Length: 228
Image 1 (cartoon, one colour):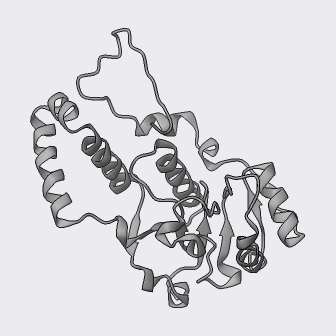
Image 2 (image 1 turned 90 degrees about the horizontal axis):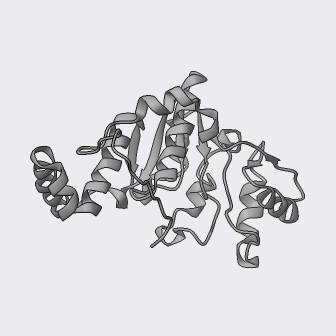
């Protein structure tokens, strides 16, 4: 079987990429081949390709210098390398997210991440796609999606009511999301485990690669912040 995955796509957030991997991996274990359907605006421009190529050359010969001079670019192409290695992708422009796409896959998966948060990157025009509005009702599958907010502005109610009622089985990854679905549709959505917790320790460790110039035997401090 073949599935298309609709999720938040980005090259700057660890959790975002790990949840995408987890969904893809979990589906593969069930015998389902998947592709993450990526809006075309996330593809690289020619200028960006040249810039990234120059930084990559430096990174191959002097990784610590490349990291110091261009940390954000180095970070981004590490994400791209991870995607290209572990997450099958397909770039689609806006006009290709239409009912004809439904004939190319057996079903579509939305999740996990905050795919149903209308405040999150809806400026890219992807909210209806992440609600699987282009797919047949029988093809719509939720995989621990998140709404990510405690209240949904009334201006979104009609859209969500219409599209959620076309999903045969609703699930979310937080209690507040289930309550929002109940308020808008009258339906009960099951609260389920985020897919990153369905992946075992050994599988996660198998993805880990040593950081250039890093000595794990030397005392160190790891810090990771969300936002600025």
